[in-house]
Image (cartoon, rainbow, N blue to C red; front, side, top):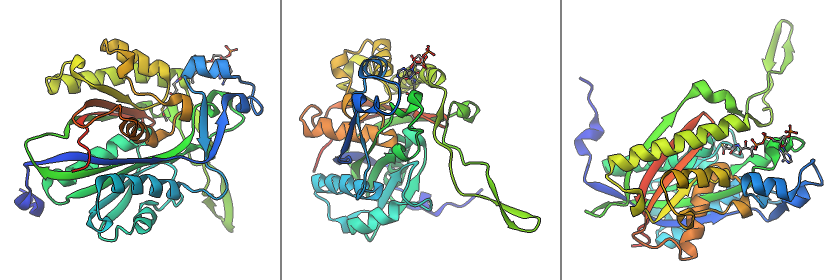
Length: 344
Ligand code: ACO
């Protein structure tokens, strides 16, 4: 039998509560009509097929690290935390400024010097996967405070001449502050996570296969990536099948009737996907949080940006029950059921 020192000290009574949120997006705004100046598309096609009206794109003088820092700062401020009290800074991104990881740069800007900081990659499911990963440290009692950030800059990786993909994505960052608390009230109630690499070829941002000469009889593979490639129809079918299925499993497991939910908080990929999931559970569209019209698909950032906007606008209130699901490349997908707690 293996020996696990953590298990000896674990406080399994810890609950994970969500106490702060924040978001940040770039200054540059690009409307559907403006995109039509670059590719053969138009506002009516994009809106009717996706619900997207505009997106934000990182421009000169902005970086993903800066956006992540701003989103995280807002979450820390809402939570009322001293940055020195943070144990973990977890950055979910597929597009870091530094391939070695951008979380330590965010940690430094935040002055969260007592934390460990690292990146996690799971494409559009990244925020949800990071939230669950961070919550495990909190539940065992090995950490008390974690900052979970979802941030992406897919504008650098789309082919701006491919109208089938470039209209879908935007840039942004969102963050949530979570805390371990010994309490009977539950914040993060339960979760489900899935991956299926067999369907990974539906959505890729692959390394190029170019080699360069090194010395005689030796070459090296150059460090560059091809733009996003997507089979839109297969991704659509995947989402409308797997998201209801995983939510159903989670709701059953937690004895939650869909009508008990205050909000459905899904990865903002396409309004038609959001509506299809709501229809499946007979949930009114008024309970489906959406900001696709303003930001498009910001990948790992969609869920925390949407959550923060809904909290700050007063729609999501302390105690509200939220079912969330992220899905995307990998393929990967996940779901979490939680109550928004708010600052202590
Ligand atoms: N503007 C105008 N016409 C377009 C555009 C555009 N931007 N894009 C495609 N078309 C045309 C096509 O060329 C095609 O024309 P044709 O019939 O003459 O060949 C026609 O519109 C229909 O194209 P489809 O690809 O069949 O359109 P579809 O209804 O499937 O919609 C879409 C495409 C919106 C991409 C849809 O498949 C979808 O939403 N899929 C899910 C994709 C997604 O959400 N990906 C991200 C999720 S994972 C993540 O977030 C990383």
